[in-house]
Length: 460
Image (cartoon, rainbow, N blue to C red):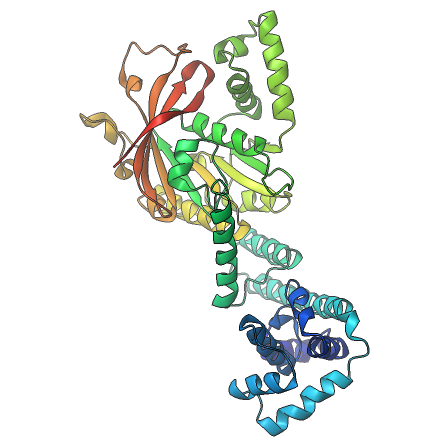
């Protein structure tokens, strides 16, 4: 919130915005006395946490000196502020020196930072409530959109994020360089979440935390199974940094939760899905089922089988999930938009765009399954293409990664669904914002609805 906004809010409410100028001065003075303390403060405090513009500019100047590995003292700080046009030399010296004198004990810098942050958070809460009230009074937005906006604002505040301001490129560069350093030390530390399929991860370098990943295929080709295989492997993976395993959230608009879990058990236990559904289990099968259930029970997988789901309802539920690592939506064409559209293509365009925004806002990869039209049926080479995506060309524009599935035996009338030896499936990477396109051959075990990695792969 800038000074103009704060002044307006104060005038309208007749009350002063929360602020502790004493703590702000003590915090800046502590950094001048002990410049090394700035490194600890930077993890929790940013320029916008200061109430006074003057204090904000002083903190920015301190950070620029820190980034340039220059000493922070009264002389260098005043020089930086003069060069930034904040002060003339005479005007700045007296206030900078006064900051040191206003600091009771420099060792209490963490307490000063905490107070400054708390007051900043109070101001952000007031600003969010004001924005939400204005949206509600205007009656121009759908109620669902207002609720989504409100939930987003308060979740950002709770997470310490402020989406209303620009990020300095220096801060982003630091994050990028840290990631690059980690990758250089550990080649297996993907920039994103590994899918669990080694050949696929070579192309994707993992799923990025804001990626919308589209899995397209004709009905019965295995897109749900492929998405569930990835979901299970992500949920079962042990984080390399020792943190808690990620939570995988599945929105199943076609299958019930029981049907989906039955498939997972079949895949995990390697028991024919028909045998599992019919209950014709032998003694050995029961042991496999028990072990599979135990393995799945140790994961953090949440399933929502609401049939009339919207992106807004999904986002509202996801905001209450702790540590989300992957979202799976099965499938796009069964979703509905919050707004009435002139045609279905327009509605699907809005849905795909909102799914991308969901991934970006929540910083979690989203896998979305999508039906293909009958285009492949009319071609000699029946491998799917981007143009086969059903109902909207904007789907491919919004997605970061598009993978289309193809199995040759799908078009053969003598294909055996109880095949436990496996067939060859192709994953055609038709769009990849992070790397190359290609065709990956994988094993497909139809009896277990399971995909598996093969050693051979082919690049375009």
